[in-house]
Length: 431
Ligand SMILES: *Cc1c(COP(=O)(O)O)cnc(C)c1O
Image 1 (cartoon, protein in one colour):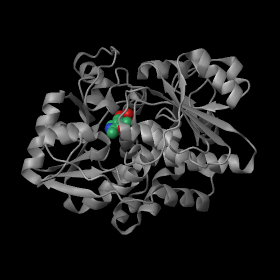
Image 2 (cartoon, helix red, strand yellow):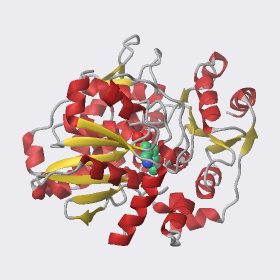
Image 3 (cartoon, helix red, strand yellow):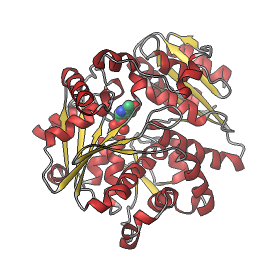
């Protein structure tokens, strides 16, 4: 499978090259040249197939012959080695829990898939790759854990000092080995700026092979399409029109859902549920795309004012806003309504949602399901990842799961940096 740049000014590349480059030289996002609908026999028997077989069938065309069948299945088996429970909340609503992976964030799947593919490609060569990422919290932990111990790969993570939760900081700074954390005195935007600058700095890119591990990278973005197949396998027997509500920030997850739909998965409608960062909500109502400065909310993994994957969503709907609006809605919710619904659902059902999942639920509520529709919202993080706000809102203390308790005892190790020159120096001397 080849990938072209959505800016159309760089040549198409293979899966491997798109994975290594992260972004095209013309700064465009890579996009598959073709998406072939899966045979109807596959959907007819999907409830009888195991998750690995489903995942393999769904993703194989995007890899082509670059990773042989048995190796690709091995990678998927390793990546999908935890549960994805679908839990009924109301008669016509279920939640798909995506947080049972090693860092308890849904980004584990994408990060692990990317890591295993990169490992596959670097194993046979002696290539060394450095992954440089900025994180506002969740991405860093998932990437760090996903790439821990992967031969030929070094990971450098920038995070804003004092602006991530204690648990998130421990997840970034206690692993060691090939993972280095850089604690930046500044905000997330400063970290992001420095990373962007490094990718354009010839002194750096001439001496080390840099790649990114955010959802711009196809290998982190595409495997997210598997969630929708997993939910469908469970819900097919209901014979209802499926409506997915996806808490969205950079719109990578929901965009992967639309790819699943293009593969033939019968999804009736998508809801991109956002916090007060409502660039896309405004775009759908006015037709004007106006990126904004991000504002801080309690669902901070979605504090994005200019969602990078939206160009891919437009490409999936042939850049036609009318078609897009037929299949896709977007609503924005305040911190106040987020907390209210967390309390409400807890009181009614005893189910604990964290703020991102709660916004997903609100998306379904606002959409208003018809009798022939069934709603699924995605819960993208374990409540423990947002401990302070969940405990305060529900007036309830949470038990800390074992995988989190064990890292809380470890010592933090991070290098402090203040500016771009210090980052550059670090990369050139240490890498
Ligand atoms: C990253 C993240 C999101 C947003 O996902 P996108 O693919 O960027 O839209 C939602 N919830 C949590 C907990 C996240 O970490």
